[in-house]
Amino acid sequence: MERLDKALKKAILEDDYFSMDESYYTVLTKEKNSQGKGVRKGYIWAALGNTVKYKILEAGTYPGVIRLGCLQHCKREFLDIEGDEDAKEIVDRINYSSIEKL
Image (cartoon, rainbow, N blue to C red):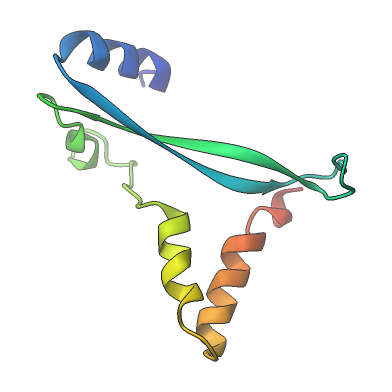
């Protein structure tokens, strides 16, 4: 399987127009930062080529790839639902999903 950095480089060089979006999220860590919190800022990048489109990643050529939307945008929708315990649980799971991996 081709590494992501090599695939992106190839795509950038092949396409005449390439756009990316950056989204940050909070990563839970064992180490405390200068404010005494066990968090740091992490980043996710989404890339789209004008010609190639890259939705091919969802095709049968890459059966193990699942395309996901921005988790922070999804989380905002649940934050807008006040007083709903299910929505609160979903937000809590998004906020603390990485703690189990520590």
